[in-house]
Image (cartoon, rainbow, N blue to C red; front, side, top):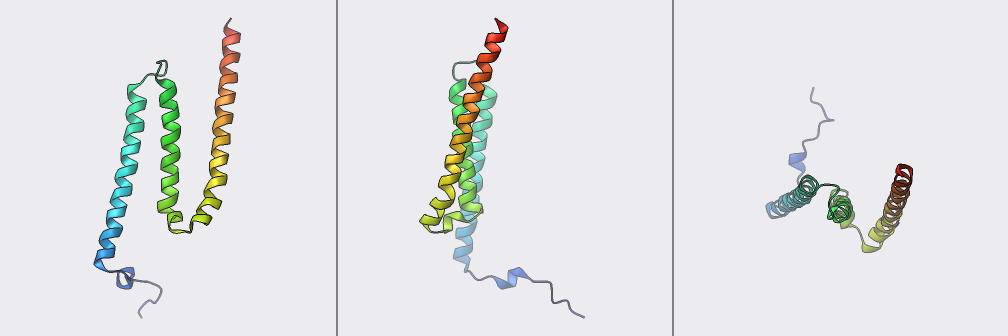
Length: 122
């Protein structure tokens, strides 16, 4: 008896070879871009010490690059980039505002804790 619940997806391809090449090129581009951004983050974290004067730049660059990677992953892998512009904005703007709020809370409370520790050491 032959099973009818197994689907052979390779027989159900609805695109030409040119479209397949375009899709594979996009996958390689996304992989390369995310790899480069991650490598830059790792290199910055490995080369610059926390106490140096460039550390605030490194922290902000980590935040910005991480948000860029997250946004790009959502746009490509969750196919939000294929949707209409209005739907993209409805989904992304509240999350962007929420992330800004979380960053503000993180930095504000971090400064307060730093001041408390500095006051306790005196």
